[in-house]
Length: 389
Image 1 (cartoon, helix red, strand yellow):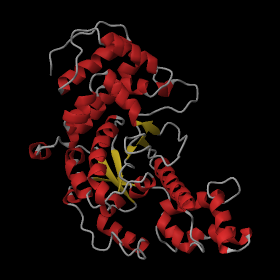
Image 2: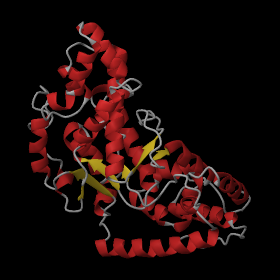
Image 3: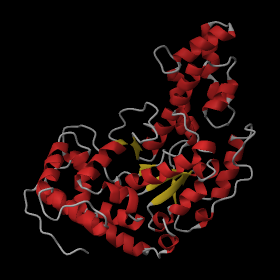
Image 4: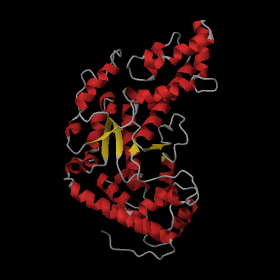
């Protein structure tokens, strides 16, 4: 992204409000014209919904660590590059905004670079930070206590990136309980026979040389024994009476990250981009009522639209916002994530390839024309090749 693009004046909030109202009205019309979407199928099956915000979990240090990737050190450049690429897809999967936990701002060394690249999205209101309080300085003071026993406490002397002072960087309050409380509820059930952490109880009892029941009771008190520390794997392991073996450590880390994801997605009624090149990044989370959206599915649809390279390589942020606002694009993505209608989309893309104007998109105008051609093909209408806007 060039400096000129970052400095480009942003549309006013009134402009975006009018655009959102207009897009909503067009979506209603196009949906009625082209038939029921997956969301309206009426068979009770969980469906992808474009009105959900997208939760940015693909920069979470604990989740990435589960997949053998560190956010700092030798992996930092790779994670940053893939995070920017994933953000392009995430932006196209929602008509609302992206959600970034405030903790990332302090815990990830390169986050100021990441947010700096996303400034156009901040100005458009398309990215927001989540925290229990709106003031990030107050938030930092809260987190200092949670990480008080961490020799590398990232909150002690962390400076806020310049982008965080931008008045367009909006706050998304988290109305639910704290993450640690939500994980605590799942923790005790996971210790029971058949639970995700039952093997840790047995292993702890064996190495601690104590009865199973005593080990179970001790582990059940882990939320209290943390004494306000963050509910993350390395802090939990310090409270245990015996060291975990590698397999148990992995199981613990996956369980905590899975519970963390579940908590945020339910509290914020958000979806999440998964199945990325860097890893699945679900930590084994399943179900979730259509909230887990494989990146590969959207990439396939973009290939059918001949817009894959445009989206990943050349499109500016404002062009991606314009593309996702097309009601035809929303309908196409809706079809791509519905198993019952994905073949309808595949057939429409095959038909569109016969049209003389359908070619690899190198500009927004070409990507838009391809989207409209596929939408027309879904209704067996001859596409009208309009003048490039």
